[in-house]
Length: 167
Ligand code: ZN
Image (cartoon, rainbow, N blue to C red; front, top):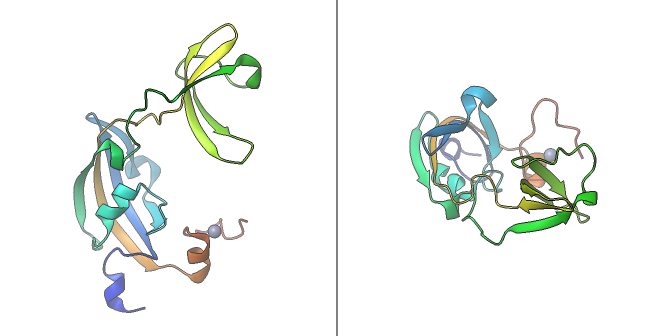
């Protein structure tokens, strides 16, 4: 791989960024707490809108950018509610408004939902992402780039110390 290709963010490169996500003047997520984020570019490991903005950035370059809801976690969907019978929940789940659930259906598809109402027989769930309908403000800085190895490209994500042996 040529030197030129490694000088800026491009598909098939493993990219490490420092970032801060600010929504409605509040810092929601930041590499100050989580540590820098390393991802494989071009595989939708991160928000596609953020990936588009990072394309072509150089190591050391910083950017402040705004993503509209449709480029972030989607518009708020007034229809994305469902009433689920109480007996569908295991006993470990605290049935209280505001509790966020990570659900997996029979096909293995994952979804997030928030409890909005607790009735005698049914629990109302909101399937909107907590950041749906919000404008996202990101501060990003590219701090490292490297070529991905063939196994990482086949898996569609980077490998670190410690996750080499996963299935
Ligand atoms: Zn892998």
